[in-house]
Image (cartoon, rainbow, N blue to C red; front, top):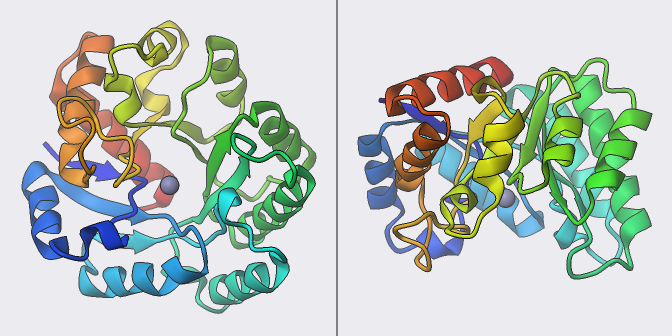
Length: 260
Ligand SMILES: [Zn+2]
């Protein structure tokens, strides 16, 4: 069984002490690729270093995580654009980008402006878009609908945790997938029922968001890509199929989206 972890921050300092061992565990568990989303300015160097260290396994993305907007985001946005446009072949996607109004609503307009700019990059460079949305479903949908996305091959609504209505609305975007991770294994999660009700397996991608959102039975500890099989187990229950089938379909989904 092999899988692709489509969203994992393994370059973080949480892994500085045992990164090589952690990558080895991911390989042994079946990881075929590990896709690394960027978050801020400091993460760029760490992410690219990790991709240099494990070139057969790790692929970087480029974008500004909406919670990490600097006081003036535009110099950093410009720097990211420069990196992306000078070496577009290096990056597998524009990500992670989007809108997050969970802790702070005061910069909503700026977050939307930056997100619009990043959608434009994905469209110009024909890259998938990896979207982080929290308390921002309607803003994400509206911003995407208003933008020119005709050249974007698709993308991921990362860490999806919404309602049946929200899932249905997001699936109207062609080529987009719901990113499913540890939350689906949490005891009180409503996600299994939502997936069962309206999301076919061919619209799902696997992700850890490591070091966060650790699946049961490791909940409370640091997350890592070797834990993806726990998510596969849970999905096989939800879809009443084998773990091999879940791994095969979701891996194919990821290969198609990222042209791997
Ligand atoms: Zn992330």
